[in-house]
Length: 153
Image (cartoon, rainbow, N blue to C red):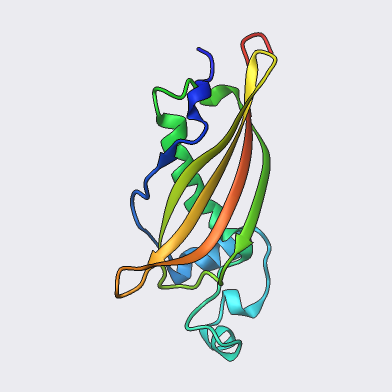
């Protein structure tokens, strides 16, 4: 199956909430060898002006990949995940991710470019939380590029 060129411009709504917990932050920090005390000690995070533990910057990938899954699992996309190579990932933080955040991500397909028998797909996940007045508070924007290899590649 070939990649659907009509994916470009498509958006996938924010699905489930990701509850950011202290232990998830600590586990992620250990996994990526982030050693700053604000990832492990609430008082160290508060001393920096945060309400709770602060996640390492790349923690946003957890939420972004959940959003990306909507595209990968979309039967209209034509994406065979076994043929996917992750090409690029970028993060723009609007504020720190802290324990207690309830994050959502809306996915946008910003580009689909044919490459031989495959395609390069660029997505953007807008990660946000909802304030008490139900207005979105931007937390991070992630941009990802994946290469979907064509048959015989």
